[in-house]
Image (cartoon, rainbow, N blue to C red; front, side, top):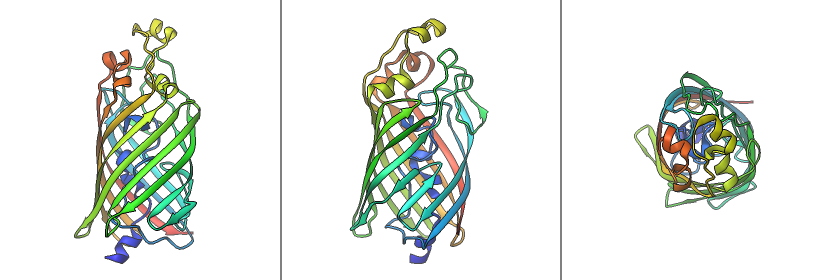
Length: 290
């Protein structure tokens, strides 16, 4: 059991509860960010440099707040150095500057992909989409830099608590905060994880993704909306991971989220979207040493 746990590909960030896009706060973000679903207990640190390659088709809402659905295929490409440094499309660039006694903390930089007003989809969209954003204009790609802190609890370290705060630049200049609580365990050869999550953001973020200014109102016929900062969304994510070998694994994941009061009150969501969001997906990954 211990060997299987140690070798489950760290790339199974593919099964991030927030990979179950579109977590409203992660809309237009690579699938991941806040809530990586990992085996029960802290995995044994990989030796040296490792690379993971994988793929994950995800079916869910076309954009954060959409009532239309879309199918995207997300890549999972990541590089890790032991349990210290990580770089990936999903999790960004981070450093576990603190890594002891169940605690992890350090700096992190993430990417939030832009939003296209033609189809609303991510850069990885292959089917479906939405025309509800036409007239809203595109939202450029954004970077988000900040820090995280994480704590594992329980006799088998089966509980994981995590908080993350990031300042946006580029496509948006707001502040974003993510929190989650997660329980993980094992049933036979299957590793499971489930837990609640929530995202908060400043007014700048809210107005970028949910607001309607005067020019947008004139083009779309929507009422002007200027949401304030507060709760972006809250929801639940879950995943099942099945190791196929010491280096390969598959995962299924799902998530459902509910927009907070500020974004839900926007005319964009009231007239062209919906408050409840969901997604389901399947992932495969392969890890090897460098």
